[in-house]
Figure 1: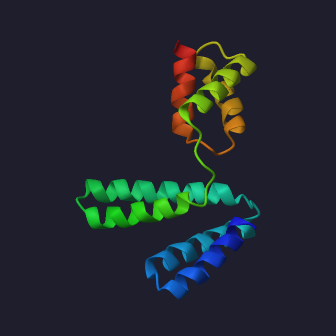
Figure 2: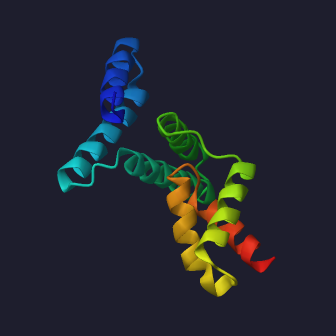
Length: 143
C-alpha cells in the first residue's frame, strides 16, 4: 500500500471518528502528494519530509511570536506526518554510515565535505535529517 492510499484510508477512519483536525491535516497531505505526482516526482517520502519540516519551522515561528496554541497545533501535525515516515536512524547507525561515506569518498578535510555528504545522504536514504548528517560529517572530517 502506498503512502497516499494509507492516507486516504486514514481520512475515512478519522471522518468516522469525528476527528476534524486529523481529517484536515491528512487531506492536506493527500493534496500535496497529488500535486507532487502531477509534477512527475512521485517521491512520497520526500513530500512527507518537506511537509513535516514546514510544520516544525512554523511551530518555531509561532513560539518565537508568543503563540503557543498555534505552535502546539503545528507540532501535532508534524507528529502526525512523522507517523508515515520511516523511523529515524540512531546516532550510532548514522555515525557508522558517515564514517563509511568519508572513507569511500576519499574526503580528507572540511573542504571535501560535499563529496562525503553526497555519499552519506544517498546511504541514509531519508532516514535522518540533513543537519544531523552534516554535523557528523564535519565532526568526522575535523577529527
